[in-house]
Length: 213
Length: 227
Image 1 (cartoon, one colour):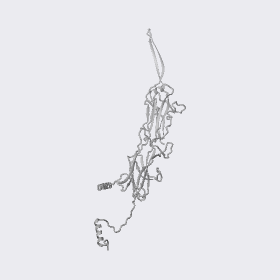
Image 2 (cartoon, one colour):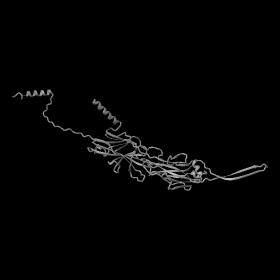
Image 3 (tube, rainbow over the protein chains, first blue to last red):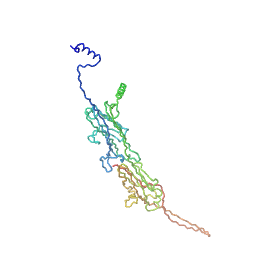
Image 4 (tube, rainbow over the protein chains, first blue to last red):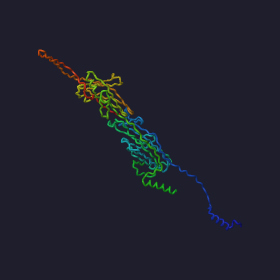
């Protein structure tokens, strides 16, 4: 009988290993898992070409809308104008809700109103476009949760392009008493800030016009 | 240090939630600046060679402007049975509108005047289209029965600054009543014999009053039309 098979030898070796603190696997196996890539979502807000149209009849009596250049158009009582600002958003991601804010720099002229549309992407208001908010220029607007309730339910990995169109309408009736015999100026169309953001907290305490879709 | 940072983040988040603010995890914005809009101006005025003020300008759409007779015109018209003519200019602008019409009429004060020169006078007016005179342009005879010219289109353009000047000629035919006075001269002579000789002669003379106060002859109204 050899020395190695001696029970006293085995016990001594085990005691030595435990005293040294090493792991002693009676049985071991291993598998390697590849790194999981977590794809980031995306939100992007971009501008596109603005335009404005005259809706009132021209000197020849034609009332079809015609594009105008701000450089040489002279507003007078009796005119009707549309100023269109197109807004483009891109959204992609799970658990993503979007809020769009329109914040005016100042209250507009009494003749100015605005309407915010969803746009089919052509940059102009068509019959298929849906008005989602509006009022006198100067009224801030916040729109949340476009499309089907929570965006997360429908968007997923698919990138969605959101098209809005903000139309400012200026119109006044012709009144000879309103003609200007002094060298005055027409009121500016006020500026505004467009902000698109991701949100998870229900909107509250907001003082403008709030639209949830 | 890490605990401190986490505590600060949690505090900010809770503060935002407590105040009801929207907590945007991500946002992007851009600003649209105010857009200026051009503005049209309207103007209507007349200036003439025989009025006290050089230009009479309308202050609003209902304001009339006048051509008046100054002392010189009064004198000229009262000194002749022929026409006395003078020029005047209509200036108009109607930026951003379709056009502007105006009408020239005799004034009520002219029609009712008892001025010895202008009472019963007639006026006719015509456009001087190219500055060389009336030529073949039609005359508008203004009388008590037909005191207005009818509308004249002054401006017919839009979407731009647009002004126009129309030169006119007005001719006044005055028929001042000639006043008559009789003058008698008498000569008395005492002769050496004590005889008194007397002779007298009378003659008639006519005269015209050729001075008078300023008088508004013509008035111009205007109307802006937009489409």
